[in-house]
Length: 415
Image (cartoon, rainbow, N blue to C red; front, side, top):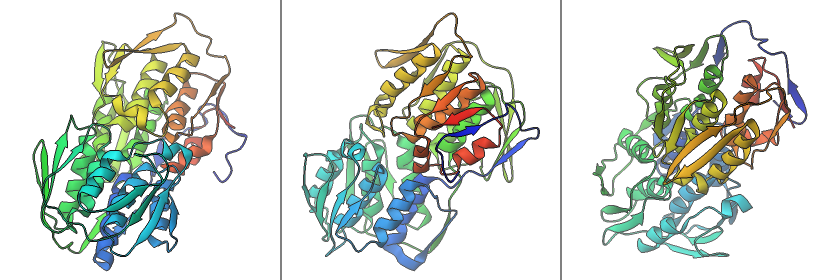
């Protein structure tokens, strides 16, 4: 929608036919492909590029001739650019971003780049944006140790520049790695362009190599697909067809298909996409580990809460360092629907009030977080008077979300 202010999506179950939804390309695949393309120029072509704010910010930054580059809220854009510009000889930039981005940790990545010879200085608070970079030829003389327990983006940023570094780059991953599937995605994309990578549980090695000609076709975004799984799980009566998705995916969030079987959603794979239909719901106690798929954790938790399912969740430690403190945001918003999210020794449990007025008006806050807005929207299937505050935040990853959501006919106020 062109203007999200004071819009009401009305007429419950107006949609009489099955839905066909075209979700944009994955921003995770897009942003990695763009960095590879920046090194290889015309040897790399990209099809179905994401139109998310994060990807548009990266495209603008790579084309910019300005000394100061503002990444907005885009954490992956900032981290990938920090590594990219650090190895661009003669390039001098100041990388900054929003107040929200300035609160996200950057120290492990910057320390690793400095160990490779990068000239980077902090301009405000040590360990956080903004930073000043003077690009130079980077060289590896010994293994680089990096904390991989905060964000996989630190690892991916280094892997994306590894083939440009003199001598073999050897990364030793300290602590327990989070979001490993995103590291595996980066390695798979590098393999597609002819970059050989040696990896085991603790060490990743890449030698200096030339990027080969390749055409990337970006798959639709599985994180964005999760909201359609939630819509189906919460009772949307018709079939939902999501175009372009495939069973064999680079995206770790494709596990949503398996997880959502417990919520009563069956996935059928076709040559041109996936079909979501209803099946029986698992009402037994279940524990979901989200350590490798944190971007779908909010969807799983809010959907379970709305369905009053006895599910619990672990692997949520990175959620505090995202666009918002997502665990705190979830606790606050789920309380509005009579669900309590409590933690005990790293496991998050849901407790429910015995009775709840489903006609009660609910105003959901989004905390400047796109995933909060989108994971809460499907709850309008259960609560008939829902308002989403600051809905434009979805542009960060899924620009057409509200237009697509409108096709369901669900009642929802955007304010």
